[in-house]
Length: 296
Image 1: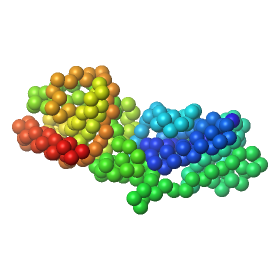
Image 2: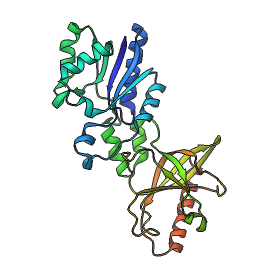
Image 3: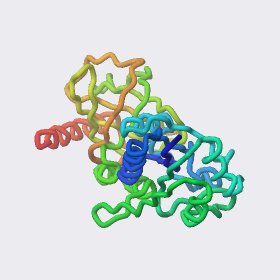
Image 4: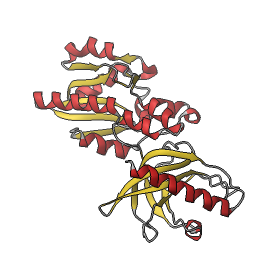
C-alpha cells in the first residue's frame, strides 16, 4: 500500500520538497510506502517544444533528490503514454495497480485526457475508492509562488542566485569532462569542457559565471563560460560549457563527472577583436571572481 505524490517535479524545488515530505509523513503514520509517480517531461515540452525553456533536472536526478527526501520508490512514466488516459481510468490505475491509499498533490494538479481531472475530482471519488487526498496550497517565497517556470525564468536571465532561493539549493550544470583542442591552456587559462547528460536541459543565459564544486574533497571555485565562443568559433552553432578553475592549472579531469554550482553571473558572452583581448578579459574575470570569493 502506498502514500503517493504525482507530478513532473522538475527541479525538485521548495514546493516539491514540501509535498514529498508530507507524502513521507503520511506513509510513516499509516505504515505505507512513500512513493512518487513522476513524468519525464512537462506537458509544454511535449506539445510546444520550441517554446519550452528546458528541464532544470534530468529524470534520473529527480529520482535521487526525491529519495534523499525520504521517498522510497519513484516511478518514472512517459507523459505521452498517460496524456490520453481518461481521468477516471488514471485514478483506477493508482488504486488498483499501485494500491494507493493516500494521494498528495499541489492545488493546481491536473491529469488525464485534456487535463479534465483535478483535485476536486480526486476528492469526489476518494471515499468510494477508499483513498485520502491531501491538497497542498501554493508555496510562497519572497512574495513569489515557487514554481519550475519561475526558476527557468531566473536562469534564462542570468540570475542563478535567485533561482537557488526557490530551488532550496544551488542550480548545477553537470556533465562528463572531455578533451578538446586546448586553446584555453594556450591562453594561460586551461579549461575543462563538459558534456551535459540530456539535450533537453535548460541553457542558462550565455555568459561567464562564478561556479563552485568539490574535487577529491577540495572545494574549488571556477569561471564557467556558457555559450558559443564567438571570438574563437565564428561559425560554431553548438552550445559549449567550459570551466576554468582559479589557480588550478594542473588538474587532469578528462573523463570525470563534475557538478558545478552556479553562484553568480559575471558578464555576458561577447566577441572580442583578438585572442589577446579575450585573454585580458579572462584575466579581469579572474580578478573579479577572487574579490567575490574573499567575501563568501
